[in-house]
Image (tube, rainbow, N blue to C red; front, side, top):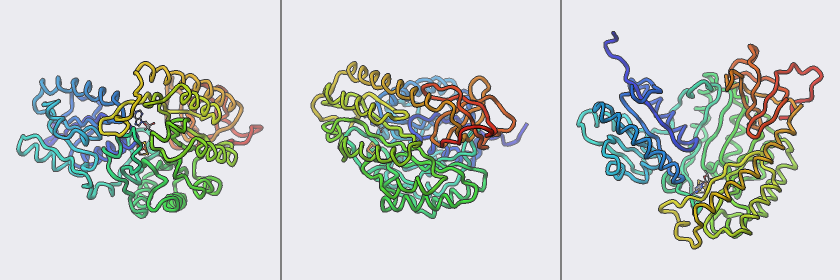
Length: 449
Ligand code: 5AD
Ligand code: SF4
């Protein structure tokens, strides 16, 4: 029997990759405090729910999860329940009112206070809370091992918050104003990760193109990252169409480690809607940038985000978005029905559409895109893609990602350990993935990405 058994923490994460990243930071801190991670909330001593408020659906999911954990708390009073992330930031002490069994609430800028909050809770038995903005001392320096079987890949946050104030978006209120990490600090983290075997780094930020002083700051960071020994692939997200620079576009042609995938949210194909969204570009601006990128790099995968049914969106506006989809032929889209978010300026716009119309338009977008994705994926059959192996997928097959971020399945092979890159010849194509076989190159087409 161990004298001092380690305690167990269960973390449930909602929302975006920034939240996944924050949860990984919390886990690294908690491990330093004597906790081990568990996948079984009923066995845990501490539950952390890292929340999202980007759409109301995400908030509903958090409330139903909280309901599940209330029952556990009723069965075991010693269980500590903490709520973090965007909902915690927005609602603060209201969380205790809505869910009185919650013990600790902390916001997006207060992760470094987790230990102090838990200690105080253990000492006094009282509820503890920290939701101050601009209070992130020490939080960003943290170097951590990436989580899970993918530990040849890691996400690194290079900035926090957003200054864009798109009219529908809650992020500037939940994550605060845009701040960039110093370049040396980021590079030190990547160097440490490379030293631990990480081969692929994904830079995260709400608008990476305005990192530091803008375009050149980000390009400099990418160039320096590519010189770090051991790093084979560099990715980033998310880019804002108004800020993507010629220097960054040029870098894709100069730096082979920069993966040819660009996530460039368009949100709508209608100029009227884009203007009410406060996106600061027109449909024509977007199309000319994207088409120029496609001409320069025919193998570049381009993905986007689209909101269906924004307030005031007419049938003609929606047709413009559908037509933009057909013109660009995105590799994939992430599409959402507009969700009114308290505190955002779009709430007070005229012309809010009924929910069923928003969802009908969403379905039409998704059907259109599915056909496009299948066509583009089918065009890949016979091609050879360089795939970095992530491990075992469904049906005991192996899976990995191409440079253009396509998910590729292939029969298990001893020559393809996690983190290795293998050439896969594509034999079958689906809407969201490809399938192929490991090839030795003899007589095969050249690798296309
Ligand atoms: N309703 C629907 N979708 C939204 N997004 C952001 N806010 C909302 C909202 N209120 C989408 C945008 C953004 C993505 C991360 O989430 O498309 O790019
Ligand atoms: Fe939200 Fe717009 Fe900032 Fe993206 S750029 S996080 S949509 S405010």
